Image (cartoon, rainbow, N blue to C red; front, side, top):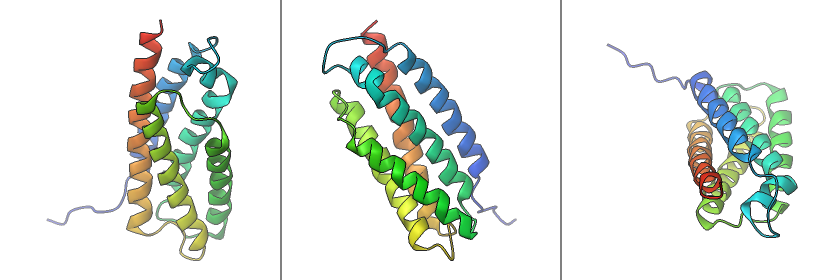
Length: 153
């Protein structure tokens, strides 16, 4: 019996969407605090960056297997989002920062591969693998943020 080996970006996209929703709820409680705390990181722009990157992961997963020329345009936009997120200040929590930086690096690698291979698009296994690793790091970030918001409550 043949095994179905095609990626399932829709299922993964739903998981990232659920993770993004949980992240949004966790970050919603972060509205005030001291200068270099998680709360101020989130309130001053970190929340918006994480939500955008979460949506970008969904975009990358949905583009997997496609080779349209418009795919590269979507990936360029994702690269702009990653650049902005990397330029924003670092997360004050070391564990959460590690997951965030890993997610950003994987998203950047996936989107770069997509742009560089605009004729073949997101059809390689490496692209899906990198997007999956970004999703995994983003999920770990969500758990970390949930831990931070509960410990600060």
